Length: 384
Image 1 (cartoon, rainbow, N blue to C red):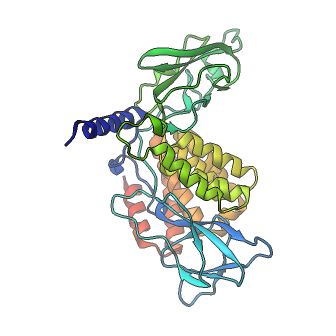
Image 2: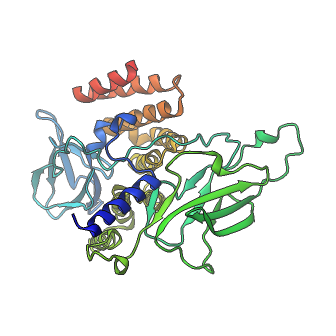
Image 3: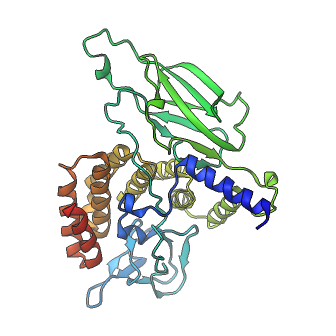
């Protein structure tokens, strides 16, 4: 093998290790089998409803398709004349447009190693009542931007119980190879954009460190997935191979060329980013879509991204919000997937008093769906 090829492999491995990715350690954290479903991202026209109908089982009446509706491979999808629908298949970069009046789900069966676009991470610290700041974003992620927005959890007010408890301020800094790149003291909020008057971050591996005036620091959280990677642009590649940044930008432009409504466009770009390990920017896209389309699947995908970088407290809060939305009661597929993910998040948090209930609720849901594979896996996890 040529030296240049070895250098590329070693660089890729080092970036993956520092960023905290893990593609073959599925035993470390259970990812729902149902995460490999596809789902409906857009239906045109949106009004009146009924332009897409879905036959889930033989002998049943077709159900009206809705944005966010999970799609299994066995489903039959039927379009009304003049209508179109966009499907996202888990584990895939680009959407699929339905064109035939009647067709089965376009999502191909996943390979045994496919986790449906989900990576598996060691859990990070619990952001609830933490005595030190915890980096929320960018964390365990690659970035297209060279000017990220930095976010962290607040220091718990209980730390100084019984004292005057002065207002907390933070010193925020970015480091590369152990050297300080930039810092800003006296920050009172829990979010800060990398300043426009500073040089852009060059491609490479970085770490955000947040220190509080209570002598606590985010460095107290010693886990491997706290860093982030600014992706290189193509001209900096010496091997003349297509660079990741350009590939993603090209696929993003093809999504924009579909001329879909803003919410569906952002959902698809969020899926593209998440599947390629750009979790921080995926969350930004999903959050923007949520302002327009507040449905369970959007909350679930934001929560999934937080779980993917080990922030299970942030994930569990959003899974609970998704369960509270009225649409989750009417959609068993969505409810089952959220319950499974919530139980897994509680497991990772060590809240073993909460996880069994959610496993039981997920088992009950998948029994109603007659999904024996999911029931078998859930029962195994519940017994543990």
